[in-house]
Image 1 (tube, one colour):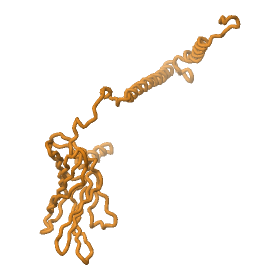
Image 2 (cartoon, rainbow, N blue to C red):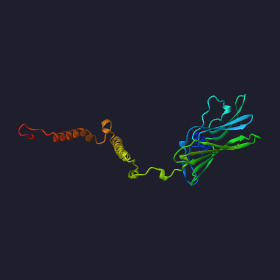
Image 3 (cartoon, rainbow, N blue to C red):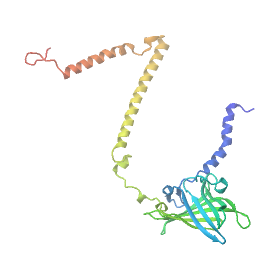
Image 4 (tube, one colour):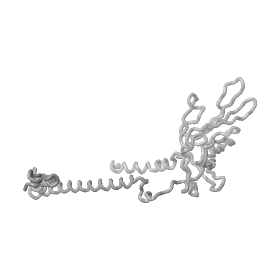
Length: 292
């Protein structure tokens, strides 16, 4: 039988694979680093985006609606059945509505293009036009012709526009890959020349107003007084133990150097009196002589 002392480590070891897997599938956080080392921050693009395209197929019309949020999971649409929208943990969802004159509209397809834990690949172009391209791998969806499962992909190209952010553009969808283009400053890589200039205070870890230096000084004084306090505590504890173990002392006799500490209040009183007499000397009524 495995003892209880060995059971906890064993359970911990058995759970490591699932923990490692969870770490590998962390939700996409809109911070991207490509193979060249360039870094991109897409957090400025956070928020729900809704795009539509219309395809005529007489006697009906199909309306494709793309809902996506790169940085957060999509919220369910109120008033829409669960079967007519994507589930939880989805970042990009494509639904197709079929419209026919004289009949009620109906949802004919609901495609999950990307999930929060989808794997993705990212590439970037350092030359004009600069851009970041991210391809998210989504789950499979049956092909409309023969119902063959086809892996879905969400292909997002963010063009570098340092001045403004445009509306995203629904480029195309071929039943497997949806292509999206977006112009925004987020498509420009972060670089040293975009960071604020450093001043002399940065070498000290300050922010220009001396607050960091004051914080360091305050921390140093705090540590100093803490060490003094611990030294006093150790002095009294060890001294009391010594008096107890060596002389069998009890009560007040446990205090190390008890006579000295009894005299401390009187010594402080004498010092204070001397200082007061030096600052405010007593004056005589005759010519201002000090009485001796």
